[in-house]
Image 1 (cartoon, rainbow, N blue to C red):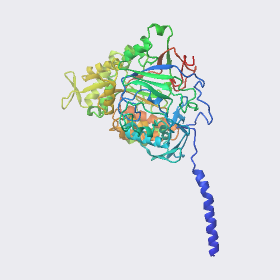
Image 2: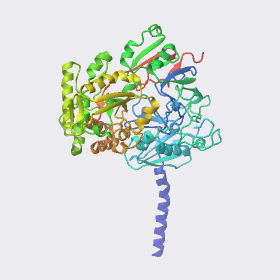
Image 3: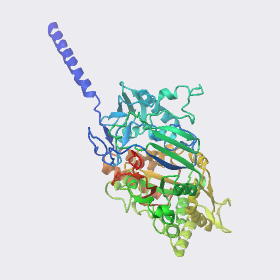
Image 4: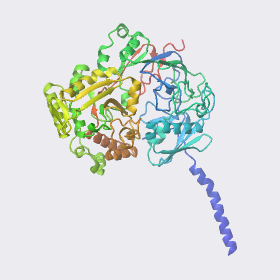
Amino acid sequence: MALSRLKAGLVASLVCLLAMPVSSKAEEPQFRIGTAILGDLKYQPGFKHFDYVKPDAPKGGEVKLSASGTFDTLNPVLLKGNVASGTELIYDTLLKKADDEANSSYGLLAEGVSYPDDVSSAVFRLRTEAKWADGTPVTPEDVIFSFEKTKELNPMATSYFAHVVSAEKTGERDVTFRFDEKNNRELPSILGTITIVPKHWWEANGPDGKPRDISRTTLEPVLGSGPYKIASMQPGASIRYELRDDYWGKNLPVNVGENNFGSISYVYFSDYDVAFEAFRAGAIDYWQDNSTSHWVTGYDFPAAKDGRIRRDELPNTLRSVGIMQALVPNMRRERFKDQRIREALNYVYDFEELNRTLSFGKLTRVDSFFFGTKFASSGLPQGQELDVLNSIKDKVPAEVFTAPYANPVGGDPQKARDNFRKAIALFKDAGWVLKNNKMVNAQTGQPFTLELLLSNPSYERSVLPYIQNLKRIGIDASVRTVDPSQYVNRIRSFDYDMIWNVWAETLNPGNEQADFWGSASVDRQGSRNYAGIADPGVDELIQKVILAKDVAEKEATTRALDRVLLARHYVVPTFYGTTTRIAYWDKFEHLPELPYYSIGFPEVWWSKSAGK
């Protein structure tokens, strides 16, 4: 009997030993060359280059660009100061987005990414050849350092990566990120966008012999792993980058045909008109024109007429984003907390008149937080979207079930008067009355004031008609335009009554929604919850958007979120165009077909003078 038990025990032990390698093998991560948030990757293992590049594009030449305001730091991690334009040229990320796919990224620093079916973690495996510009290998320690410092020092990243609870080295070249929620398919993709900085450089002493500090701004030229290096700069005024001959990743499939310019320079201007005059004179090579009226009237000069300057209107960039451009009242101010007040502010905005008098009728009124995409709500909710709203019926406005959102319509004196009357009535319902042509609190007599904060004088012509309309209903309204540094600081600390803002939405709304509209971000300085939204129904819808399992569920939940945000009248929607307008000196070339979701400038363009 004892012998039988011994044999049985040996057999059992042998079975366990034989099973162990099989189990370990089954748990080995299955690496992919990239990640698609929803759907499949277009490019497969072994691809040579993206379809939208010229693989043998010549390298060389220069491009001179303009930037607004000033800069006072080169630290890409810290949310302090104004980071110099173009610093992304210095660094590589773990993954690189493909501009002909909506939601796909492919390995750059990482040769592969792996995650389980429930997306409870993600493993990135670094390329053996990845090097910093000083020849030091890029290591898992660099990735962990970059993630932890980004999450610590950048409030937006704190929200964005809130569900990433740890990063650890799990192999010679592997970094594993662990999540405290499952089935968020966006997390591996957005982790791939983190700017990876060199731990050894930031923890060493600088040229002054003192330790560097990543928690402070710096103008010391930083070390990167990307295709360009800083060649020269005048702090606050200009910065020039040069293409690195020794760039480790120049022959990677994701880089072939890209990074073609020998140098890229940014010159800073505090005034829009002065910057355009520099472009007109040839000191700047490329101009993106965001003013419809200027696009129509501002190119009556020889270089634009004879073809030395070319002009294009392209839909590419706007295929990949939804836009909410709006005037944003700050609900951290008591007088804007009442929904009736916010709705009244929209009745005062006469888009049709502004479009006619300032923009030649070429603008379109924004009527969705996801304007221009399949996620924009319309009509009454139906099907899966209706099911989503019914599941939280007690947390959303009743009108989302009965009345489609529509902006007030103006454009002639009678419509304007009607809209003003509706606005005054809404103010009265909220406890404010017109007294001696002043809008005052019915109980305290306190006047209703509103200061619109701007960062650029070029916006003033678009908002001054609105300010005048506010004054017509007795509001003490004004515009304050401040320099970019002051504007950034005031925005980060939510020190304003109202601002002009643009939220750009991707074709895969996800974690960023919590930073835009979530309760957890309302008091976190540096968040993009500029309106001050703290709404349980919105929070629940955001979570449903993030955890959507497929395209149909993503569309339904996002439309439901859009509908609720609109019904709460958190912003005064303004307008947007349907194309990106660019002008450039005839010094560049690109393939006849640009990337479907991008203009690709300067990444896949090249200089006509290169190689000559």
